[in-house]
Length: 182
Image (cartoon, rainbow, N blue to C red):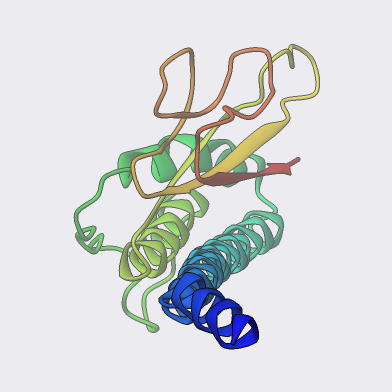
């Protein structure tokens, strides 16, 4: 009879243990699913950021090629002001010159037209562009083409929204790219 009492006691001590095991297993599964969900969100953010960088580089490369194609020195020197003139988050307004294929374009007007086309393409992607002298450059007239999106601005300075710092390094919190053009 003592065997039955022991058996009865051990069953009473084991009551509810199966439920605790199930709850612990559910907790571990929930933590695993939560970790996977966070990983998935980060992957989507990284994909979005990579797409923005790729699109921004395409816009800047196109503008750099247009600058190279406008071989006139007056036209080339007009690009920084032309690009900066379209530096806003709203859609740019088309310049009146160079939009007719039968009209000859001056190099300066061509710079404005190229800047407009690039700004229009960038704006359609939620990107802002700018062109300025690269930090630290005093002799070679090296120009920095900047593209920024999100809360960043395509500027060089000390602000938290600036793409680059005045030392020439990227702002760690910025979402932007820079390309040098000569």
